[in-house]
Every structure is written in C-alpha cells, then in structure tokens.
Length: 102
Image (tube, rainbow, N blue to C red; front, side):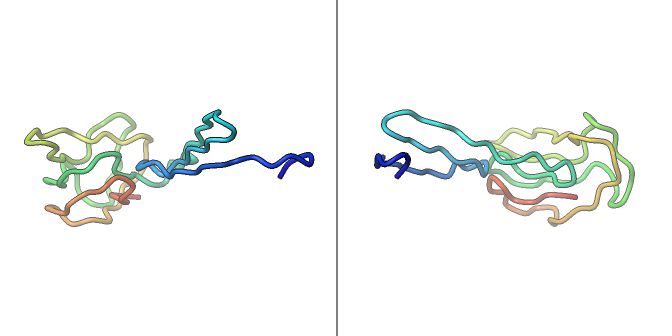
C-alpha cells in the first residue's frame, strides 16, 4: 500500500541475481550490485581449466580460465585487475551466480 492505494506486485528473481518487479502492469528491473572482488558465472557450463596459477596477478580483460558451454570452449576474462584466488576445482559444473574466483 502506498499513499492509501494498494497495488498488485509480482516479483521474479533473474538467474543473474537481479530482481524483476511488476507493479500495476509496469515492469521494473533491479540488477545485482557489481562487486569487483568476486568473479561469478553468468551462464551454465563446465569449468574446463584455469589458464593462470592461483594467487597470480591478472590484468583486466585478460583470460584466466576456460569454460565449456554447449560443446564450445570459451575463455572467461577478469573484469578487474588484481590477484586471483580460485574457489572451484577444474571440472566443476557451473550454474549462473556460482562464485568462480575472488
């Protein structure tokens, strides 16, 4: 209820961690806050392997691991520069929102 008027509200969580609200037929999307200290999976897939060693420095935009998505191998790039620490073992199955590295 807002200003004495009640509204029908429908909420749905997106796979990427955001939220979609529909209020009186109008849709509003709230994205998850960006945290540069965490590298999260955005798609489902399999972690094929890391291309750098744990604890090494990685520059922004440089690949640090490879994932398999629908029979294709794709590199994942570091969103920011820094020292990377892996949270998953090679061969792990990924779901959207899984923490890959810090």
